[in-house]
Length: 403
Image (tube, rainbow, N blue to C red; front, side, top):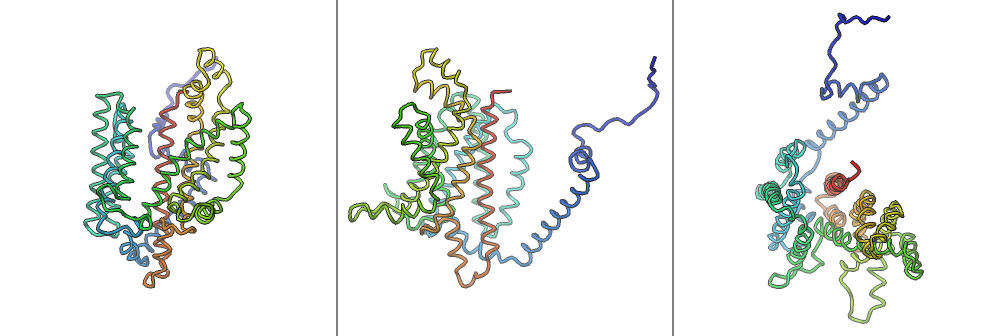
């Protein structure tokens, strides 16, 4: 019979949340892993220290400070900048309120990563090379998001059906934003030729996403249709558009479309660019949605028919919700790609963020300051794309019904 010595003492194991054990498990579990971790940490430390040294001693941040309004809104009239700040306030309020309503059932609204991010934001705003008024306005926007998120959570708990009206409220906000940017109906009209910078980039991406999504869903359903005409048309459209580069579609919209229109009829070039982006992105979205449709078992449709649902109802209530849930990562990936593709608009004469950056670098006093300008462009694109990625993951968690 085997005996066990119970008198032998041993050190208690590390708790799972111990930082030393976490580091040892993830970075120093083996000699090879330890060596590779030390090399990578050394490279990261070397890169960070060199970047900080360059940013504090060699970088010419004056190019950003002087041209920040151009980078943000292009040649938008300075006396109308109050509209842009009002738009920023509207977006911040609706974003915070939506965040609070969606997270109304969460135990804590501001978790540790969010609190850390909120604490770091004032430091980042303080380091931005702009005047004090601009910094105070940015801080006000951050506070507005926090306050409206808290209000949204409180109201969301009292009225559980408040989330149903978020989409409609965002539609109203979008119409207000377009009115404030373009003017009219009591506001001074601002020509689209003066729209530019980050404002134009975001506006083009949002409108194109809004239009391409339903068109892509219809094309995906058409490609799966039993009607030969619908199926052939959808397949033809998708394959033709996917076989063309985006830049050629943009050139066709800017140069060739006016040639086929009557004299004096020339659609706004921003509308033509939006049309090109929408037509291009919808073809790729259709394939993403089709992948989601193919993942749904045929039994789902048969069960819907057994319950007496016709084809439109079974698609709208049974098949599409499940297919879109499966296709969320690829759909958001296409949205991110569409946002990045807006940089091609500078080739066809629209002064979006990259186009206005090239104009700034052509100024004699800022020749050679490429790193500073393109670093800001890259940071802005990364922040927006990462926000879209985080939103995608949150949607996946919310709609995950497998656990």
